[in-house]
Length: 332
Image 1 (cartoon, rainbow, N blue to C red):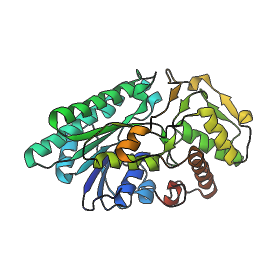
Image 2: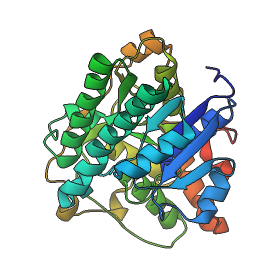
Image 3: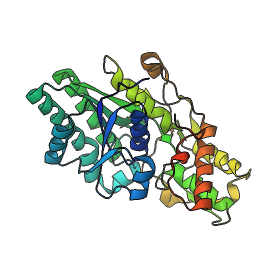
Image 4: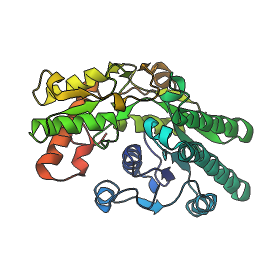
């Protein structure tokens, strides 16, 4: 996919995993990128390492006046809404904040785009990052409910207002930018620390859940293809292959030469979610047919990248480096 140079793109949640990969993907294709993040969202070193040529604007995505003022100033051609409370577990503790960010901010953004169009005739395209969790048995979690409500906002603004708007139900996608707040980041960091002799155990909840894990660097390509399509279409995005969390654990330990993770893993009932979907796996054919897109990074290569980067972080003390971002040492 080739981005048209000269286009202006607005990305919310730009200092998160997907935001960083997407911003760099678009900048490499000639787009001007303006990113939105909470004022204290990321340390300066992270922004310098990954977002040096992106205009990062501190802003509350739930503040209607701030959002409208930014949209009026930037006049984006494309908007990617990646800002979210992204933890299902956190959503149980903070349901009001989850709904405000994951659904309310979507309404705020599309209203601002429609208002700009009404006043100036400027057309923008809108992408909403949804989640496969809305289809699972944990769909009644505050996280999934808010994401489902945001999908309805997108459908309504597309069908009734004619906005080029779409959402992707993104299956689990990871990278070395995952923090230890996510189970994948927690595992790969702990494996690196165990291999280095710094810790001797890893505490986890349910190891029997199965997920469709892909590489975030692949998934941002799918997002851009969706926005570039002549007709907006909502799609599931994933690899089409499910792995158990226990498989991810075994793969991560194998990277450091440990064949049996069992002596290092402690099952902690306190870490089991109030509700969890046993299996979530994407149908990759709709995206392949509509976009010509398929994930290209294998599960094994993804896990290997995450573990080796965490080992490098421990070795060097450098938390963020552009070399960490991709499987082959060069960006997708």
